[in-house]
Amino acid sequence: MRTDVITINTGSRPSVRDITDEARRFVAGQGDGLLHVFVPHATAGLALIETGSGSDQDLITALDELLPTDSRWRHRHGSPGHGRDHVMPALVPPYASVPVVDGELALGTWQSICLVDPNGDNPTRQVRFSFLAG
Image 1 (cartoon, rainbow, N blue to C red):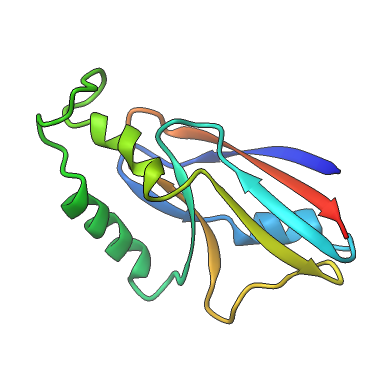
Image 2: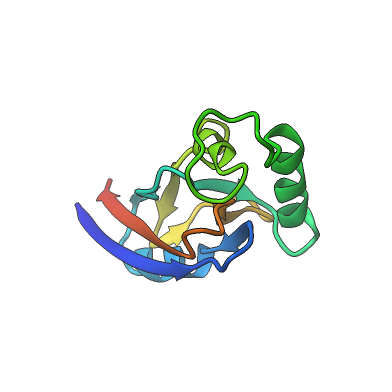
């Protein structure tokens, strides 16, 4: 298995960051197999969605509606409402797997691999790419 960790700056506001190009570079020339992407953080996740058409902001809006940043959360350290950031990975998991064919990601036409980070308290994230040859 081949593996590597990259660092992504997500900023101080909730964000959806397209990391598809980084994933493509990682699998380039690797042949057939499986790319596994993992975010080793308790308050971030990965989504396969369309970007550039507003879907990324729609995802943030949906998460804000499902998991508001108010005082309902028992987990209370960090910014107000930060407890919701710890619940989000149950809905947007911290992992994704994508088939790789001839060194190319086998994504659908409009799919992108996106890092979802609602937690503005931690603007630096690690993402682990692992390639398992087929």
